[in-house]
Amino acid sequence: MRSTDHSDFTSSELRHLRALKTPAGVQKFLDDLPYNLSFTARSPKKVLHDHTASCLEGGIFGAAALRILGFPPLIFDLEAEQDTDHVVAVFKVRAHWGAVAKSNFTGCRYREPVYRSLRELAMSYFNIYFNLRGERTLRRYSRPVNLARFDHLSWMTTEKPIWFVAEYLCEISHISLLTPAMERNLTRVDRRTVRAEMVGHRKKSAVR
Image (cartoon, rainbow, N blue to C red):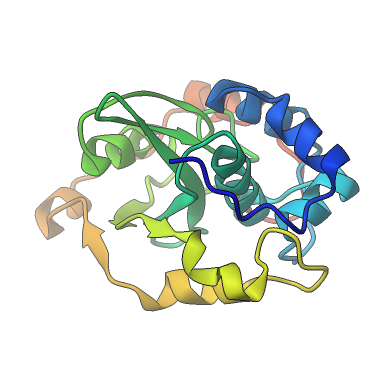
């Protein structure tokens, strides 16, 4: 069902968001933004105007944009060891999951809606989820979080930072992807993969 909770966006902003048309269009918009290396938590409205986004901001923007297009505003959290987490917006088409995301790494972005479960979707990020030492770091994923729970805080359009979303993701339970034996036997990512995943990588810190 299409949400009508868009009242704090201007008509011009809504036209801009609706012009994205599809999840792939939302991803293209995010891909065209410079990656934000600052420690900020902009609302989707601020991302639209500041024209930059981090992983967290991109995932939340993706959820808001998907909501305008008629999807529920869902995100889920990929949790890592010795690395940063990754927040993505998720959506379903004909009972299959896809994702929209902003990342400083090549492969941690869009996923076509072809995954039968959230575990399948999370595992699609595993092989190219690594830190700058080449260690494979993805370990857990959360259940989807419907950001409508934060409508009373105007998460889509507030001028204030929306750290409350990140704080909530830190509080909820996550599901393990690997057994301890699997973790002990992981190999490092090869140099060719590292180079491919870091095309266009912006340097400041190891941010995903």
